[in-house]
Each structure stands twice: as structure tokens, then as C-alpha cells.
Image (tube, rainbow, N blue to C red; front, top):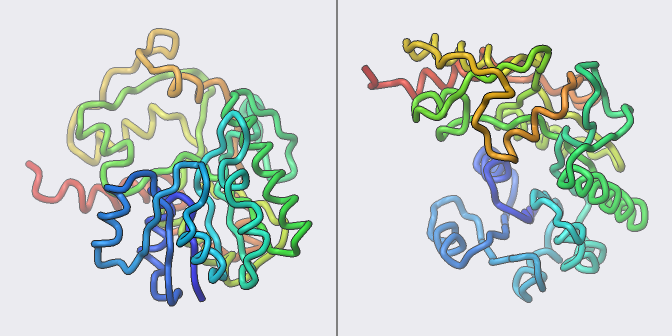
Length: 295
């Protein structure tokens, strides 16, 4: 089995690292020649091509034609999905391609006032980027219906994991804030559990399926930072009311939506048991490695 990845970012890289032995060959796109050179020189056995959203390189198109599985983790732009714009015919015509995973976001649900949502909940995206995601999801599902290829949508919650990409990492860098907006909760998902969800789907393709990839416990962000501080043995940052918080526009926009995301379908239909069902298990695991050797 061969794998092609559009956008070798954090989540896709982790999946490849965890499941490289499932694939005879792995190809992936990156945004710069420097990143391509680094990936090609690394020992992971991934062959990288530069893709900036324009025409697909001939070598990349030839590789895609040999792929059995495809992961798409490049976000859409104002003009639509850049992968479909550049490579729809190549994807549709790939003779061996039977499984396509489109990585989306739970942001497509928009604000539900803190209520629980599942994959059947109405989509009410409140931001331009999440409205673009809704359009891109439908475009990929339409391609699946037209070609018979098994397209699955994975709506990811807030991603965290090793390498400093977590509330603990922000705390250790002095960047964490305890922002309080009464009633606000967020779901999260450890990158390891994203990889597990993709692997389970690859073993059991389901054309047109949509999965929420989220943890079991949506929680207030200030509680998560306080827990990370407790594990690190430091005083938590002071609580800051949301209205007074110094946040860039992108970070502030996340607080516009409040919902609790159910992962029941992921557990029951794909049989995924989360390694990190809440932020506590996930941050504790990170603490065991990222705090090692610190005073």
C-alpha cells in the first residue's frame, strides 16, 4: 500500500511516523524547497514535493497515480480548496486510490451555546475560515460520490501533543494565559489519538463518513492551564477576564464559539479507544517527558 499526503504538517507527520511500516512508499507535499530537502534527507523514508497551491509537479502527479491512500491536511483558501483546484483530475483518476481522509475542524459547527453536538448537528460556522471548511468538506464528499472513492471527513478538535505544542509547552515558554470567559469550554485532541483515528478508518473505509475526533471532556481553558502549572510545580498565571485579555484576532475568534463535541461515532463505529481521553492524561504524559531534567 502506498500513501500520498497533501500537507505534511503536525498531524500528518505524526501519523506517518507512527504508521510508516504500513506503507511501501510515502509521498508528501510541503511548502518550500528547504522543507522538501529536509524531509528527503531524513531517515523516515518519505519523498517530498513542493506544492504551493498551484499546479502539481509532474513527479508528484505520477506518485499520486500510484497511491492507495490519501490524506489531505491543507486548509482551503478564499477561492476554495487548493488541492482540488490544482489536482482534482489527478485525484479522481488515480486508479488505485481507495481511501481519502480530509482533515477538517470542529469549528464548522460554530456556536451552540455550550450544548453537545455530534456529526448530525447543523453547521453554523461563524468565521470566514470555517465557512471555507464547510465548502471544502462538501467538495471532497462530492468527489467521493462521483468517483466511488471512499472519502471520509475528520473534524479535529484543538490539537496538542509533544514538541511544545500544548498548554504545558506554552506555560514553560512563559506564553500561557488563564483567560476566563464564564461558561466557555473547548474540546481538545492529542495528536496520537488523531493518528489512531486515521489508522482505524484506513482499516475500515466508510465512504462519506464524518467523524468528530475529540476528547471525552470539553473543559474551560483556564482549568487546563492550572493543571499544567500544577504538574510543572509552578504558580499558574493569574486569571484574566476574556474582555481584558491580550489576544491576537485569530486566538480571540476561537472564543466566539462554545460547544461540547461528542466523539461517540469515533468510538462506536471505528472502535477507537483514546489513549488520552481527557486533557489530564495527555498533559501528564507530556509532563513526564518535557519536564525531565528541569529543576
